[in-house]
Image (cartoon, rainbow, N blue to C red):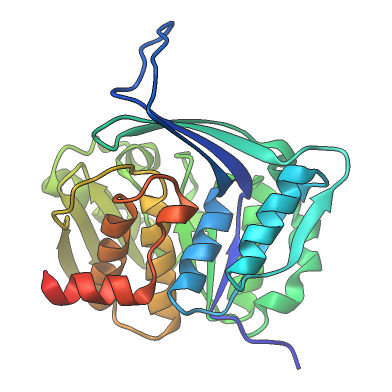
Length: 308
């Protein structure tokens, strides 16, 4: 019998190199930092780990190289209980990498090299068709080739799954694609790329979310600068204010939000509850250096919710 997965993630898998310094360097400037971390990462792998730590049954569809970095990515996912049978290995292209710089306020900038992620094809996704059968939620991103993303959405919908899109990196999308999405979760820059609305505050985030709904998305969670998130759907709206925690590194916070949201939807929770749970998970992820290392477990999220 084919296992039923709560969340199937289709996305990038990398190795992250993270350096922290007093501030982010200007062009041409060299700075001395105070911390360094090398760890498995990539939005797809991060979101798979995030969902697994929250108790979900998770499978990932992605591509890494046949190199030591790829081995490290696979080991990290397996250690979290993620099904990696469809994390395919590319013998010609190395595993992708991300170079992450973080300042003392937790702000980040990231430069990535796609590597084997660029060779995740629609055929690779079709080869994983078994994991989509009975899946409750399919979570995917724009950081993989478009045909692979579209195939993930198609297979997810054909199996009756809800589709969550993390639209990173920010790119314009046609209405036909947006109409297939149950929940989209853009940050400020991604929302502007999708809608043309410059996000400055809660009202402009709401305007972007309204536009996304008019274009066919069933629900949108739009980041409102550093204030919080607007969650809008056809029958309601919720404001998700930021939790007041001291940030160390924002890397992985968006992945924590998306994975937590997907887990709640897989559990059948209503959107307002799912949004608040996801917001708490994202806040906790900012308190630890690195991406996968920062992704919280369910007990920590529930504790934050109970004390806030």
